[in-house]
View 1 (cartoon, one colour):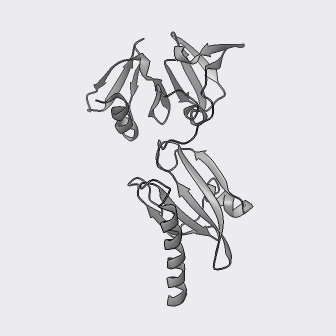
View 2: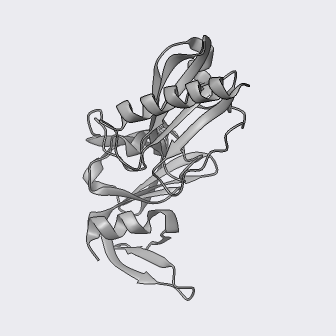
Length: 223
C-alpha cells in the first residue's frame, strides 16, 4: 500500500471520528471493518480493546452490516465488557470497497428502552403464573435457563437476562453477568474472606458481586 493511500485512509477515518465525537460519549468506541477485517479502531473505554487486522466475528454487528449492507443496531451480549452493551453499525465505502462503521456505546449507557415489565410470567412444573415485578427479589441465569424468585419460590422464564435488563424498572440492577437483583430486597452488603462484595437479600440469599459491576452498584446505592 502506498504512503499516499495510507494518508488518504487515515484522513477518512479521522473525519468519521471528528463527526461522531459531536454526538457520542467520550468513552464510546469506533471501529471500521472492510473485507471481514478490522482496519481502524479508536476507543475511550479502558476495557475495550480490538486488534487492527483481526477477523470480524460472525456474531458481531460488523459482520451483519458487511453481509447485508444495511444499518444494524442491537443490544449485544457480554463478549466485550462482561455486560450487555449497545452497538450500531453503518454501511460505508472505503476506497470503493464495502465496509462497516461500528459505534460501540459504553456499558450501562442509557438508551431509549421499551416499556418496562409490570410482571413476569413464570413456570413451575406445568403451571404458568404471572408475578408482579415488585414482588421479584432477583433473577439469575443457571444452566442456560433464566429463573426468577418471589417469596421464596423459584420460577422459570423464557426471557433472557439480556432482554430483561432492557425492560426492567430502575430498581433492578445487574451485579453479575448471571444475576440481576431488586435493590428493594437488599438486606445488607458485606465483604467475604477474600474482600469480594456479597449482597444478602431480605430472605437470606447471598449473591456475589462481580468486579465488573461493583462500581455501578456503588454509584446507584451511593456507598
